Length: 483
Image: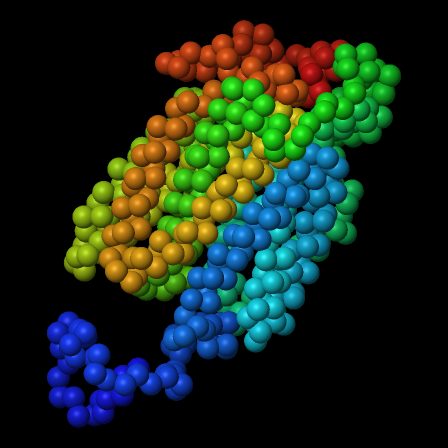
């Protein structure tokens, strides 16, 4: 603070006084006495460790470090998921996150160590929910994949909605960390309910285990069939594992490289916009817990609408339309953001922007899942996450532009990004009603026979099966996900 006798100042003209010609002649003192507003937060890491004044960038840097950790972890664990299986990576992810967050709780007084364990604790943040999601998608028929995706996304939204109320009730950050970290260990103690993907097992030539899990699924679904390794071998012409070269394989062939590049672009734009809005809205006036709840709850209807649109218009058009509508609703916020009397309308517009971005987030995940082949599905999801997290590091700094210079700057940037996303998304293949590609050859040709100006249509055979609801055991065996 400036070395001024503040008691002698009779009136305060901030705009005119706070200029170079006035304060350049004043000495600057360290602000070593401060009082924290405890209206909403009784205890935070910021208030406990004095992350203010010269340390005011620690918060922003911590957010960036978490994104860096996710990038590094996703690079390794995404590829390991395709190499060693989705199930084992899920359990490794649970253990890594719990250990990392516990370590964070006891290193806050040493920012260097806190930064290191923050990176470690975020290594598996993506693979934690990515692995079970992939398993669920790989055992679902084409018509149900969007419904599977909405279950996971609704669970995500429910968690976000509960999160602020936990902090509101407990009041301090340490208890909050305990309550939100340790329950993950529950999954380690209920391994019976976690299966490996039969599609992945068959792709890796492990037909005995694939048959085992398919029989478990059939039993739960009350289907009177019994698959064996020998029976599966007759259904699969070549059970030798396909040679792949990690993420580089995603760029082998023009069409696969194009799809990968566009998915990364869409993912980067969506993630940067999504997390920037979370931080932007969190700084709004009023009760921060209710603000966070409202912006999280808006995702639930977004996912329902997104599922309907994705199953009706298709994934491609839903992606593009949502980006366009998100950019259009940025305009009222840009116009009204600096007018106090219109602040309520500007805030509502931002929430609507997040509504449409939630739909794009939902659809992009679905498109990526359905575009990449089985042998590289988790790697494909991971490379998109890596790209989005790299650019997501810019999120807190974009918000910082708004608080430091002009509150409209973040929304202006999001407006331009969403327009770019709406155009890029149009050049992805339509995945609705399409069989998931299993091999690299199928992935390189995926979408080659599709027309640009078209809506997806269900095949006659699939429609007839759904109409009759009469699938025999032999047909079930022939139509199982391995095919």
